Amino acid sequence: MNKKILVSGATGTIGSFLVDELRKRNTEFVALVRDDAKAEKLNKNGIQTVIGDLGNKESLLAAMNDVEKVFLLSTTSPQSPELQGNVVKAAQTKGIKHIVKIAARGSAPDADFNIGRWHGITEEEIRESGIPYTFIHAHTFMQNLFFDAGSIEKENAIYSSQGDGKIPMVDARDIAAVAAVVLTEPGHEGKTYVVTGPEAVSYHDIAKELSVLLGREIKYIQQTPEEGHKAMLSSGMPEWLVDDMTLLNKRYASNEAAEVSKDVEKVTGRKAIPLRKFLNDFKNRFK
Ligand SMILES: NC(=O)c1ccc[n+]([C@@H]2O[C@H](COP(=O)([O-])OP(=O)(O)OC[C@H]3O[C@@H](n4cnc5c(N)ncnc54)[C@H](OP(=O)(O)O)[C@@H]3O)[C@@H](O)[C@H]2O)c1
Image (cartoon, rainbow, N blue to C red; front, side):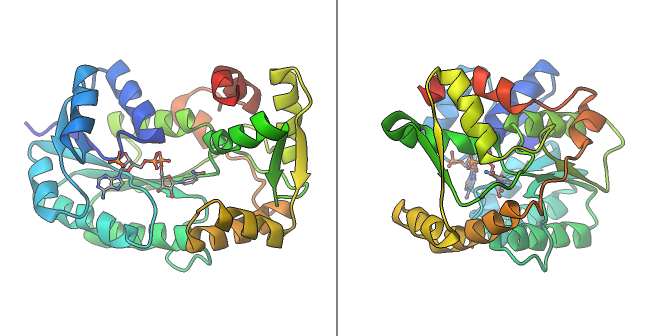
């Protein structure tokens, strides 16, 4: 009987937490990984793997043997619609019964930011495929704060062009927890869950919490959108992503994305993880 779940993105942030959640639930799953070295690492932890790439259609068909449900996640890039489209087409061929896709808050085929539009294109393709689906629209991950570890260490400072605006950042563990429930329990087909943290926080709040956590003052240095754009470009981020982040930060600065969703609690039965707990749990990443 086809019972297995195929987990893509299992080596990434959400995927590695999802794998833990699925193991706790004693669910049969197989992680799609791109090479032997990655497979070996997961195998050592008792995780079954299959080698494949979203760019290789044959590998996807083979990976979906004896698979019933697919967890769809990959790095977002201009190639995402094509790569994730390959998964949808393979899933159609193999008669997959449920696709659970990670997307971003505000995703839609006509979204005005690249990430949202690329996710929206794939979601449209999934809808049109007729395969039952669940979409998980995640807000900004708390784990993105790991990128600030360098300036925290060197300058006791965090930088952003989000002004005084607040957003309900979400711990990726909550996204994984929602995905695990959706993949293993009935009743989630056709739904889109918006996954946020339990409270909207500003960079002032983050700096305050980091100061308490680290026992020294961490300053929040506000950037203009132009300064933020320049800094992100010089850090090596691709231009399309810098443009997206500049647009989103302007929106966040004016509190246009501050709404807290209750979907984590609705789906998992427990409250979403607050910023303070996230920072405490990952204290080592900021030292
Ligand atoms: N960061 C945020 O604040 C945020 C907010 C909302 C939504 N999102 C969405 O979350 C998703 C990213 O989640 P994440 O941060 O957990 O991912 P991640 O840590 O960036 O990991 C990406 C995963 O995708 C795999 N992958 C990439 N290209 C692949 C390919 N061609 N074939 C097979 N596997 C491939 C990677 O495998 P390898 O190990 O082989 O590279 C890795 O496991 C994106 O869709 C993004 O738009 C992010």
